[in-house]
Structures are given as structure tokens and as C-alpha cells.
Length: 300
Image (cartoon, rainbow, N blue to C red; front, side, top):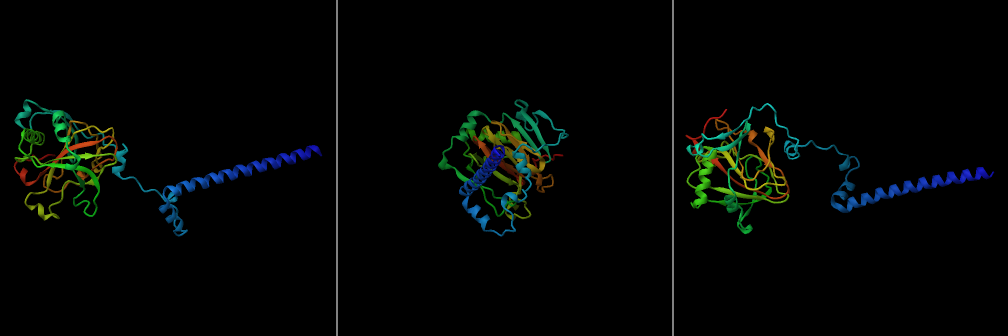
């Protein structure tokens, strides 16, 4: 009788402990749900009020990552058989025979080149010592994103004042590109702060849908100087070409936006990954098509 009594007590005690543990787990789940709700109450209440047939957000299938997102995560792998080369460019202009550029081929379609040591510390200091009040917010504005505007960075455009620095950079741009840069540089200095990014866009406008470009032609090519390193993020991504370029202070990225026949090259679509740590300073300008009528080389 005593043994039977003790067994019954132990069973009851075990059952009570299991119920207590089960109750604590349920309370913990409720507590976590409440915390989630407090963190984002409008969305949480919206989900509670929707039809029971509509699954909760956590239960819905996740969308596939875009090529841009994969590139920013380091998962965009370029083909291994691209037949690309590094070289000393000494042929674009006569001056380069004395001071050739370290040139790295990044892509053949679109044609993208990376020039190392293309801008120097004193020049970088000149373009980055700009006051915040002299800069304005920049937004995307081209025909690939006609109805969307994103705040992406702060920018200051230098109209070209003809001083020594202006003339030096103008000649540098000519040496790098082999194209006509005009008599005044129209360089834009841009700063990306924490969290800033540039969504996928094209630099070309497509003259067929932008008649205002009949006088200048479309944006043939783009040159972008990196004025700073970026600790994390800030990569330039060409998602359709499987190209990822990490910002490197002093280097310059150059690419063509159009095919040889003047048609837009959709593979020149590009964007900038969000800045996770640090700042991204750049200096950029574009070349219009008609100015390069007798200067632009045909590339394969």
C-alpha cells in the first residue's frame, strides 16, 4: 500500500511539472509575440484584421533575391572564361607614352575598364573638402525608373572654372577615355553616407524616347573616380554583366553605355550597394554621343 501511494504521488508530481513547463513555454511564446507586436504595431494589427484565408507574413513564400541583391551579398559570380587582361595603357593619348595608366579590363560587354592610381590625394582633398550646405540631395532620374525617385546621396556639380585643378582633371579624363571632354569639366562630386545606396538604373536615356537629346546625343560613356575606400558596402554592381567592383581610393571606373551603333546597351544597367560602414566619395561625369563623332573607337 505504501509503495503504491508513493508511485501515485510521483506520477502526479511529474504530470504537474510537465504542465508547468508547458505553461511556461506558452507564456514565453505569448511574450515574444507581444514584443514583436510592440516593435511594429501597425503591421501586426493589419495582419490580425485581414481575412483568415490570407496567410501571415511569416508563412508566405519568400521572393527570390534580385541579381543586385546577390551582388551586394557577394554571391554574384562572374564567368571564369572572360579572357580579360591587365596592362599599362600607353596608347590612348601621346602623354601616356611618358606616364602610362595601370589598366584592368573588367568586362567586354559592356566594355568596362578600371584605371588604378588615376587621381591623387591633393586632388581628392580638393573635391571632398566641400561644405554640406553647398551640396544638394541627388535622386535617380532616367527613363529606366521614370516614376520612382530615391534619395541616394549628396552631390555638388563643378561647372568648370578653368583653374589649374580643373584643367588637370580635364586632361586626365581625356587620357583615360580617349574621348573629347570639352573645354570645361562638369564633374559631380557625390557623397554616400551610412545607409545610402543607388538602385539599378542606366546612364543612357534612349534618344528614341527622349527627343531633347537630339542636340547632344545620348550618354555614350561614364567615368567614375573613387575618392575613398569603403569599409563595408558601396560596391558598384552591373547585375546583367555579373560584375562587382569594390571602391578603391584613387582608381577610376570607365564604361560605355551604348553599343557601337548608338543603341542602348541594357547590360550597362548598374547600381550601388548600401553603405554599411564608412563613407563613399566619388567624382563622376558622362560623355555625350555627338561630341565623340570622330573620337570614339569601335570596340568588339
